[in-house]
Amino acid sequence: MFRNKRTILLILILASVLFAEVANADYIFGTPMNLGPGINSAAIDAAPSVSADGLSLFLASMRPGGLGGFDLWVATRATTDDDWGVPVNLGPTVNTSSVDTTPSISSNGLSLYFESTRSGADIWVATRPTRDDDWSAPVKLGPPVNTSSGEGFQSISADGLELYFWSDRPGGYSGDEIWVTKRETIDDTWSEPVNLGPPVNSPSLEASPNISSDGLMLLFQSNRPGGYGGVDIWVTRRRTTEDAWGTPVNLGPGVNTSDNDLTPYISSDGSTLYFSSWRSGGFGGNDLWQVSIEPIVDLNGDGIVDAQDMCMIVDNWGTDDSLCDIGPMPWGDGIVDVQDLIVLAEHLFEGLGEDVIERRISVGSDDAEEALNAGYTNWNYSSDLEIVDDHIDNGGRQLIGLTFRDIDIARGAMISNAYIEFVCDEVKNGTEDAYFLIWGHFTPNSEGFVAPYVISNRPKTAATVPWEPDPWNAGGQKIQTANIAPIIQELIDQEGWVAGNAVEIIIGADPSKPAFTGVRCAESYEGSAAAAPLLHIEVSVP
Image (cartoon, rainbow, N blue to C red; front, side):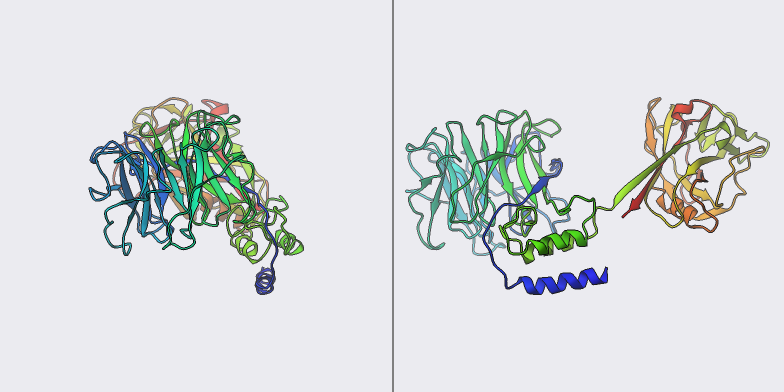
């Protein structure tokens, strides 16, 4: 590993002097996630725009508390790891009783472009001296950007020199198209807008353009053929900021749905796509969603990011190989260089595979109940397992013992995750609070349970895991314990452990918690061999 790190440093130094032309890289989208009830409301929430530092989220919303049908709002957070705060209305300086919508915040956070119908559908801009100051009264951009036709859905480039927008002005191809206006410096006036033309614009509707911070990717919404719903999100890319835009590509069913998916906005670092959607699973008619954009860093597809992937980057150094061009944005910058090595180094040794081992209780003598109250019977071959209280048969508290056989894991293997899955047998007291503690029988090979089925005197693992189970409210419901990987790890690391041995897990009441009356009644082997407790273990492998 140390040699690999040294290699990275040497290559990084050499990389800084190399140059080549551009191309496109490979990337994938994660699973879309709703921004939640803190951001979304029962009303329509749309048109996200996130500041370059990722700490301010501007949006348009019809929620109560505004001045018009659509108002501009902003939510903030202290760090990018924090949740968003509750959106705050930008107030009467910016908003009016008209429709104020589709915000686009500049990269320096000092200019806020938006569409307003206060005097026709036009593009306006509000400014402020610093990010701590209030917004000034908005100013209409005026001609040549605004016309007697409609203009809006704008996106300001990171350098502030290009403004992409929708317009239904004459001179286009369909009447609802994307245009761009440019200026030499941020102090200059905007030039005569130019229609992006085909293949970006089509006889269908194109709107809501969003230009990436590197200027190489343009996302927009369109109802053109080839989509998955009424309106989908599409992307077009170009080799350099001086080149023409390529043929648009639909973002696919991982992002788009059969509903309308709208108003895309890509974060300044290219890692997150924000958008609005009418899909199910939200809190209102139209909600804000986000999805991660991830570079494909396992270049040779062997399941791990390692020195072999690094060598592929070195072998393609200075070329426009799209497979190896993974930085600084997930879609690359058109040259295999130091930026790609930096991204690869951030993911180095990720992707360790997982071997999954699952073992179910296989004989009636491998699950048992020990009554902790004198005078009551310990049980084996029982039709169910009351965790960890049986007032009827055992007078109250008891321990549950479970033996799982043929654990084919070598001593010293790394356990990344483990849990026991139970199947609910009876609901009795299953919705009341319960506080359990899980530990292991510290022996290299459990022999199961024989009369008198005493569990409490067995040597314990040092590792214990508290478990506060969710309510059990339906027969047949499957419930998993907390992660018991530390217990399994201790059992297979002990002297005498051999692959194929058996492990024993014990569950009792957690003595550090308050008294409780909740019970979790699970199927046992005798009750249902097919639904007997199941041990799931994930083993990390190179």
